[in-house]
Length: 171
Image (cartoon, rainbow, N blue to C red):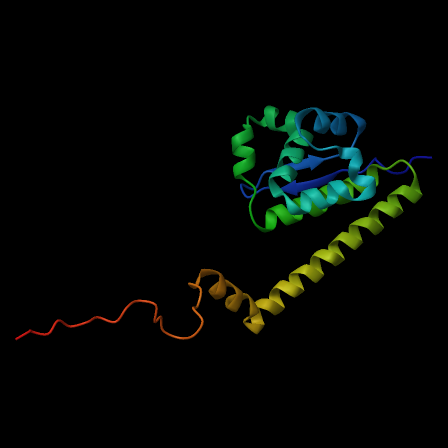
């Protein structure tokens, strides 16, 4: 019976190039060797949280996955990195995390990882909603203004400087 780990996802970069991502022992070993990421940290959600928070780490990982393809196509690491921005990063992130979930050998582990991924996405949606509410209410703008405004002195205008005494001519 074959299940899990046999899928391949395709991502497209901003240059229109397509890259096949397949989570295998070999590709995950390459990720471990070429990046600071532990691809098996996915089971507790730590890797998912890292790649959601750090798109550079995500692209590091993706490059490790597609290294052979990039070399065969004559695409340098720098050119690969330059071809990821905006929505392409989000699409690559989603594809990578789904592929990683499919790699898990046991169906219960795949299900658990998908639950973790859904939870992370839910938390990120809540954080975005909180940020948006702060922007819409003006709370964020007030906080920024308070941070850059000089501190107010208490008691109104300063009276600490001595009053100027005009010299009067003496007779």
